Length: 402
Ligand code: HEC
Ligand code: HEC
Image (tube, rainbow, N blue to C red; front, side, top):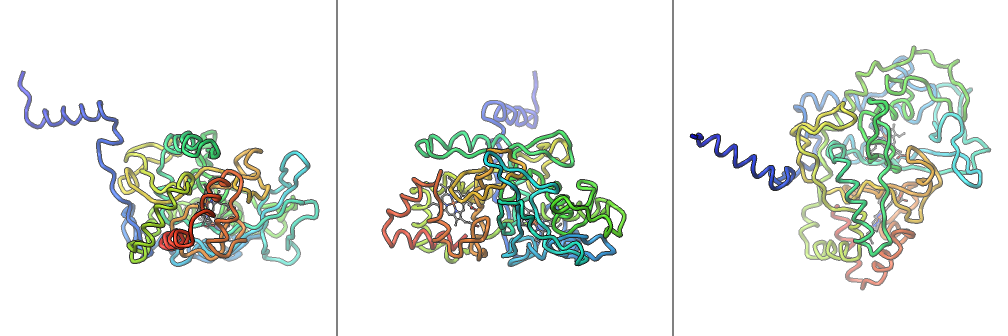
């Protein structure tokens, strides 16, 4: 039998794919990083810029703002240092703890601090004995985070008990993909890993933060269970789906937060990174992930990982899993009752741009955020406390380079 050179190469490639494991056959490439307002290659720069404008657009009563809301545009809370990043802006969550479990007040746990009419100004209900702040999180790089397979995150969780000598076990919460009802995926976005898809988050945030109803969340908020219908002058849904689609393309096309390359190259930061790993911070703040191969179908069949996001290496310094590190605020979102006092490992990429740390912004220095860790992170923080002053300074240099 005769085989052409081309078909022999093809057969050899197939043999490699079969014998090795597809994931390792093609080396992953580094995801583009930058605070430069440029597309990561998912779409052209013109499309990216147009979608950024939608993300920055201030809604008005005519376009559906409110009746209750927290801000007029996505970028009001996601902008430091470029559109799509995080910011110091916080929101309020509240609910009831009845002695055994957390209960939402009718209307959910997120409060809206602003209203288009003083008559519907909302304040936390007196019945709510659980009250917490939430600082805005970063979105840069989240297109790659969305493209991490569930299996990869579950494997990370499965390895943690042996990596930590038993103390650490992250929880992968399964959350519904709003655009694919009935389909569940490992949550990874938000302080409680409450969403798995960026489109789901966009639909949720547009209604809950800006007050604009949309096909994924088609009815107005009812803060503390109170209807705001009398003040809803625009027919629902106020967004036909075009805006949430634009937000999503913009978010998926964002580059990852870049390192401070000058600081990162110093001996102090390099040695600090070793201490970070040696003390065990890296068990939860996982340095590196590789996204699913191009062509992988995710989000309940509604999204296929494109080339710009597939098989990319990223350095988020998070496992995207929930842990109890002693800072829990008692709020349950999509993760079920056991997630009450757990939080997603805060991704540390872009840390140097964050001024208010931990979910509630209660830590104002990185050192304070570290020493506040307890619970699952107790042993690791003891190790940190045992480091000499020089090693601690080096570890902080490393963190300041992120
Ligand atoms: C009033 C401030 C505010 C506005 C406006 C706002 N967000 Fe957010 N955003 C937040 C906060 C706070 C969080 C963290 C929420 C949590 O986990 O409780 C967040 C988290 C996110 C995340 C998750 C990122 C991650 O990896 O954790 C996405 C995605 C997001 N927002 C998208 C949007 C979009 C799209 C809009 C506009 C429709 C928007 N946000 C408007 C405050 C805001
Ligand atoms: C058991 C898992 C775990 C370990 C181990 C761990 N962390 Fe964390 N880390 C978390 C979680 C969860 C949060 C979010 C807590 C919150 O918001 O209340 C967090 C938050 C942080 C923050 C705040 C980031 C922000 O944007 O708010 C910093 C800084 C941090 N960790 C650094 C470290 C360092 C340094 C170590 C090692 C000494 C470490 N962590 C060990 C899980 C862990």
